[in-house]
Amino acid sequence: MDPTTLSLIQLGVVFFALGFLGRLAGRIGMSPVPLYLLGGLAFGHGGLVDLGGINDFAHIASEIGVILLLLMLGLEYTAHELVTGLRQSWMAGLLDLVLNMVPGIAVAFMLGWGPVGALVMAGITYSSSSGIIAKVLGDLGRLGNRETPVVLAILVIEDLAMAAYLPILTAVLAGVSFLGGLTTVGISLAVISAVLLGALRYGHIVSNVLESPDRESFLLKLLGAALLVAGFASALQVSAAVGAFLLGIAISGGTATNATRVLEPLRDLFAAMFFVLFGLNTDPRTIPPVLGVALALAVVSAATKVVTGWWAARRQGIATLGQARAGAALIARGEFSIVIAGLAVASGAVPKELAALATTYVLIMAVFGPVAARYVEPLVRLFQGKKSRGKEPEIIF
Image (cartoon, rainbow, N blue to C red):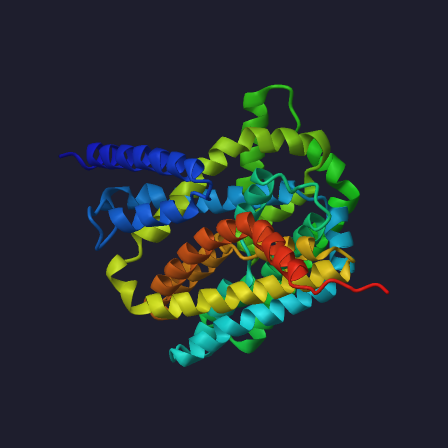
């Protein structure tokens, strides 16, 4: 059969299957991310069916998917909100970084992956999934809750930390010298600072340039700008995804609202291919050996995220129930963890087992995170009820 014909048939099968998986995820009230990963595992090397004909398309589609994921995440914030959140919640962000990088570092050294593996695993366990968390908060009707700004502030700090972390990781994986690594980080931070400053002062100009009454023209300009900025960011040794995130921050007002509405279907399509590609590149036969480690890591890092959210919310004077909701909301891991693992494995600087561990870990956390966020409130109420019933009644004389 002609290779193009075969690729079209295989791609059709994948999209059709993803549609059913997405609908299934909606019915059971969970993120489709873990199901997409499972779909990739089923259709990749070592799975039930090897659909190798879609690899070329899946690769470029997955790159676009990451760019759109981060672009739309940036559209949710303004530069002012980023700066304000950083000032108010930097202590919580520091606690988040320390508590949630340590488990990944410990596992890497326990498995003998060395300093490079430790750096990779630190990023995998550190970053919560902004996409999954935003969806869960919306689905549960908690966007207006008192603890939600605390959660979003921590996510913003994580995104900024990732903007510095990813260039460092890229430099280390490329094997550049210490001086070269410092130069890379310096360039990255300079670019990020310049873009944030420009977004604060000239964001309205960016929005006006992109705005268009014609839907087709608006979509083309928006997508073109995202790919251009991502490409130039990559050329300046800044992550392409972080470049897209910063562009999203620069877009504000009604333009940001319209951009979110126009890009949402495209984001869902290409992001699905991103998660599928990661699954395609992971041999499911490598998962059972790391399942125990992934479960242990999931338990520990879920607890550290709960502690982070609980402490941050308590510091803002939020009640116990809000503290618990904030902690549970931060558990889910997703896109950044997969991006980091994908970069590391593609570089050849870490063992392939790391991809299996990362995939298994993200699967567990992507499923458990939304479940924990949904059921933490009734569990806390139940615990508080039992605690109050357990008190002895006062005797008044």
